[in-house]
Length: 301
Image (cartoon, rainbow, N blue to C red):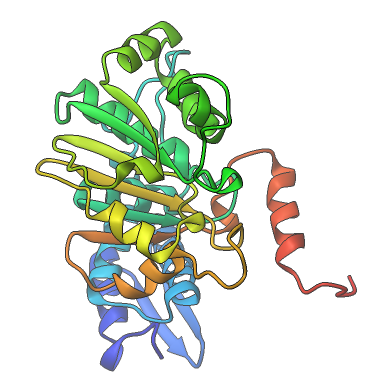
């Protein structure tokens, strides 16, 4: 069984790390030990099963990372790791999946996060970027989004470039304004510390000491995704977010995000994180709406 690993190697890793007793019978696992350890083991298996559903495979590194997140979840959400909101509250991952996402962004140069609406993909990406900027780890934040509805031709919209692309970047601005004073955001935009750019304007650039966030990555084409990922310069991180169930491209065009998930999964310092409905942190109805749309059409309740 893929969940157990070759010769039960993953079970032994979980057993030794969490000091629990595991008894596997068919597809079921009996967990015995201290209550806290049993709870961590259950969360570990939940996360690993989720990943198996998404990627159809597990590696020893996947198991080690999941165990690390589960064991040290309190450390992953410590105040120094993420941004402070305007209200004075700390921005913290609220699920194990979100903790894996934050850890992936910390540990890797490129992170691709896929999941449904409300899982915090964009919000946590901006939070990580703001934290790195405040700590002096980067000098710029670049926000990018494909303007699919306008066919990447924004000239007919009124205003300057910022005004033209603003409707497409509104979710990123909302996240920024939650973490920084609007006046500071405006100053950073004027001084190019924060830059907004439609995807079509990224060609030919190299971005050093920056966090570059591509939102709605499912609406890129394969050539666009390749072009975007190769913009990264020294000291930079790239974060791509998207929902592969919400592709707005014509049916004949393959999504660059879906292509990248399959093409890039075995590259070092590049992480692919899958979130699901259990990571939704919006209104409780959002989980139920997502679940309803994922069910087969016409299915009887």
